[in-house]
Length: 626
Image (cartoon, rainbow, N blue to C red; front, side, top):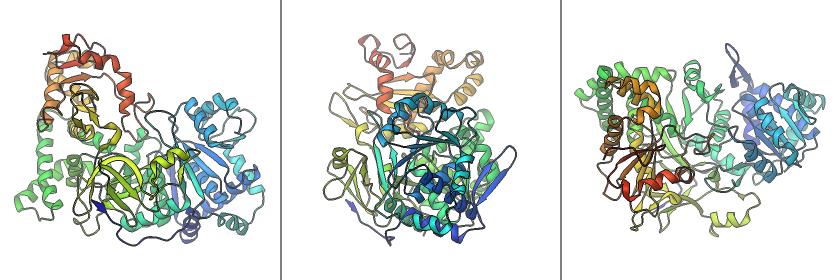
C-alpha cells in the first residue's frame, strides 16, 4: 500500500530565512532560558540576533568561508544554539558531535568532515579534543564555552571569540546580506549517524530539508508563542535540534535542561507546555509508577486499569459511561494528577520519536492527561516523516501507529516489507560516500529507510522492526524482535530486554531487570539481605530467578511457540551510551550486545543446559531453575 501526500506543502527556503524572520518578529520576547546557580535567566530574540551576528563575524575573522566545516561538541545549552545559528548565517557547515563520544570516535568525525574549527563546552570535552588534536591536521581553532584555564595554542574562550566578532565592526546590514546568501540547496549541516557496525556516515542535510520540515511540522502540531518547552534530548541528534528550530520559529521559549539527570527537577521549575523525547523516558516513568508494592501497589494497578478503560473509550471516539468516568476521576486524584504535577502541571502533549513506543504505555499517559503524539523519522529525513496529531481528535490520532505522512511526503511498502519514502525532507546524501548514497536513494528518489512497517487503509503507518534486526532462526522462521521487546518494557520488573536467536534453533532473551522494583519485591518476600547485597547476589537467588522468568513468560503468552524465548539470561547491569551498547537516542545496539555476551549466549544452547531456563551472565553454565 502507498500513502500519498496530503495537505499543503511549503515552498523552498532556508533556516536563515526563518531565523531572521523570528528575531525580527519576536525581538523583545525570551528565546532561550538557562539556569544559573539559583535561578533561570532569559536571552531575548533581539539579544540572540546580536550575538549571532558577532559570532558570524568572528567565524569570518578566523578565515572560515562558505562550505567550510565546524564541529560542535557540547551538551545542550544556549551557546550551542548560538554557535549553530552563527554557522548557518556565515555559511559554515556545522557538524554536531555527541558529548558522550570518546576521543577516538571524535577524531574520526573531525577528520572525515575536514572540520577547521571546533566549539566545545567545557574542560572535559576540551580534554578529549586535546588528546587527539595532533591527529587532526585540518583542525585550526577551538572555542571553549566555559573559561578553559590553561589550553594549547589555537584555543580561545567563548567570551574572547564573541568580543573578536564585535571588534570586527560589521554592520547589521552586512550581517544580513551575508546571511541571506544561503540557498535552499546548500548543505546546512552534516550529522554523523551513530551506527551499530562500522564507521558512522555523515548525513548531509540542506537548508531546504530543514526549512521544509520546520514549516510542515508547524502546520501539523499546535505550537505557538504562548507555549514553552524544555530541551533535554541531545541537540547533536536531529530530532531535538529540528524541534528547537520549530520552537524558535513560532516564538516558543526554549529552556535548556542542566543535565539529563536533572530533567525531573527542571520540568517542575520550567513547567513546560510541551516537550519532545524518546520512548525510554516514558518507559522509565511507567516502570517507576508501577514499582510500588503492597497496598499502594494495588491502588496504583487499580488506577491504571480504570484509566485505560477511560482512555480506550476516548481514543475510539466514544464518551465513557458514567461508571468509567467516576473511576477515572478517582484514579486521577490518587495517581494521575501526581504524574502531571511531576512534569510541571501544564504539559499539553509530548512528541515521541526515535523508536516505537508500547501502545499500553501511550494509553497510560493519555489516561493521565499527558497525550503522547508518536511520530517517525530518521536522521536522513531531517527527521519528520509521520506524526500523530490532536487536530480533529481522534481522527488524526491512532495509538500504536506513528501517524500519517506529513504533507508533501510519499510512502510505500516494498515487497520485502521495507518502508520507502520520498519527499523534500530526504537528505542530499552521505558525505564523501556516493556509493552508499546510491544504495540508500534509488533512481526514482525513494529513500530506503531500513525499517519494516505496515500502512493501514487510513494511511497510518505502524513500524514493526528494523530490517537488519529481523531474526531468522535455523529453521527459517522470521521473528521481529522489537514488538516482543516493547511488550516486555511495560513490565515494571524489566528494564532492558534484548531478543537474540539469529541462525539459532530457538530464540533467547537477555534481560537487565529494573533493580529498584525488583529489590522492593525481594524485601517484601523476605529476601531483604539479598536485595541489600547488590544485583548479582539478588539475581543468584532461585526464587528471584523463577519470579523474573514467570514475569517475562507471563507477558508473552500471546506469542507462537517459535517466537517465545526458551532461555532467559539475566544481566546485573544495563546498557549505556558510554559502553557503546546504546545509541544516543537510547536504542539498544543489538549486534554490539550479541558480540559482548557471545560466550554466555553460546552457553544457553549447550546440550548440558537444555533443561535450564534461567541463567546469569557471570555464571551461565551453573545458574537457573529447570
